[in-house]
Amino acid sequence: MHSVTTKSHFTTEASARSQTSAHSKMINVKPMEAVEALYCKDQDELSEEIVASLSRTIFGASETRPAGWVQRTLARVSYRVLQWTTTSSKPADAPGSEVEVFSNKLMERSRHPYARALLGSSRSETASLVEGGDPMNGNYMMLAPEIRMNGGLWDRLFLDSVQGKDVRLRMALETRATYETARRWLEQEKPVRLKAVAAGTGLSMILVYDRLIRDGYHPRLLTVTITDWEKANIAKANRLMDKLATTRERKHDLGTGFGISAETEDIFAEYQKGAACSAPYDVVTAIGILEYFQGFSYCTTEQRLKLKTQVEAPTAQDLVKRLYDMTTDCASLIVNTCRDDASTRILELFGRKFDYRNREGLRSLLTSADFRRVRLVGSGNIYDVEIYEKTQSRAMAG
Image (cartoon, one colour):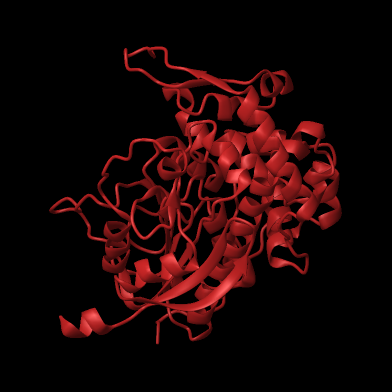
């Protein structure tokens, strides 16, 4: 048994603030303003209230639902309209390399950050905004009822789309599954190590850590690591952690000690010799990453659009082998599928490319690396979230 007790008492002025105060602070905050508040260098109290509202929604009794048939029909109509009205060109960017730039007058007139991010998705100066950056995180803010009620017309069109609702559902399912899996370890008074791979701004894992600490679990039983290849995403995660009472004093270096950390990492790169080697993890989330790796997919953007397909490395199988190496013998892996849908085809119009993988393809992929499916956490129109466990066959054979 671990030498520290399982429970600790967490009391701060921030945790003592009432829900009435939270509502009054956020009553006039709009979705994109909430994103800005979360990841800027000030507005600490507002950031804590936003996180508290997201936590209440995700862990509370309210249920996040995927889009219904009316919105799915509108998505198909929207896809056709955008397909007819979107143009692209390939000017040279500042360093002289050719990039594809998109134009659509309907979206440009909205002046919405989400639309600007989509239209500039391939430009080097805005790439980080698309890959988990500020405009795309506006989807998550719509989970908070106090913020959602302030959403305008364009917020609802962009953020309440089929894709937007599925992204929110995927995040809620991922967050609850991570929390419940970690809690099972903690209820046995066992320390638990959690890692988010390609976590964008790390909001889901931060919510999990915040909730576990507020539940009273001892910080010394928790090691939480957030990694992403994009420096801008990690910078945002660290700025958010610096604001929260549960995380600002518990940050640690990558892979060492207990607490929570956010660091840039290429998960395919070998650890530098002489550096502190990270111990394996008990719970790993790999949400929103497998759809960008080739292999075990029933369709790809290139196949659908009849584009020239290039063989890329690493593959999806390389990724799951790496996930196998970083996990303990009885570890849980939380992953998602990605299905072809009119809403994802809208993203394809603006240069995004996906490897579409259904549940059967995901199972074949992970079985090839000795993971077995445990349960389906939940499903939307585009994504399923599932939990897999590592089998011990390879470890025993070694």
